Length: 356
Image (cartoon, rainbow, N blue to C red; front, side):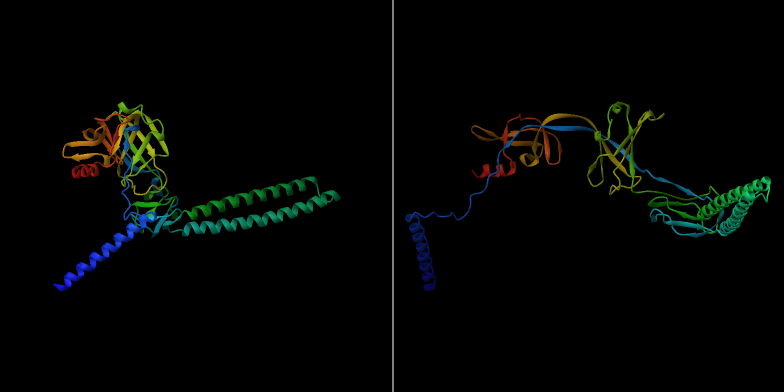
């Protein structure tokens, strides 16, 4: 009990000293810093008309711009399958190989023919050079010179024909190795290992993921919309909105749905989009001025929506009719007019009013 009494006396003395020091500083004219800074108040919110865009929302289907089937361009037996369904491939990557013994033999034969033709051309050129030297001396006749010139021209033509045959043989041999025309995904395998194929036989199907498009059925009532890419936005699965780089509208309607097809090319390498997906497509209908307030300025309790409106006598909780809300802003259909000043945080204002 004695210890508690001594502790109380000590605290009383320390408090008295602190008060005496503060009074001394004030008497000396020195400024006294406040212990805590006053809370910063947010500026009032002034209601003003804001332009908004009205959109018509439709459903669209994603498809690949580059899609197709590679076919055999030479005959032979499938000797190697290098990819399978759902494999991702790069442009120029080998997909499968066809046995090319006959094609290789044709290349070898064409090379031999070219070598023989080149040798004959060299000999014809030498013979022509000799005859041109002898005609000046009168040793040979003009007919013999003409014959040598014709032989030289024939040798040159044979060389050209042999070079063309070699080029064709090499190209045919190159067809035994099927390469990917673009980067993408293999969707179908139409042949199996060991099968014999002929020119035109389908081998593999696939599509590219780098360039995609969205196709939309446009009703007749919206035919005047979507004149240019800036009038359209595509909503991606992650919530982002992108503008197509190209817009194509087909000027004929489907015989059953009587709708017009609208094709929208997405920006290259759009992430998060795959062929076959459904996406929302919005077409710009027009712009209008509306009153909008932030969501924080609204007090919502059940079916009630209200704001704290500044009046000459103080704050008044005013009911409003709320329309569409987007990106943290809500459209006010009734209850406010331009120039009204609101509390920026309705819940904070309600708590402050409750403590008054």
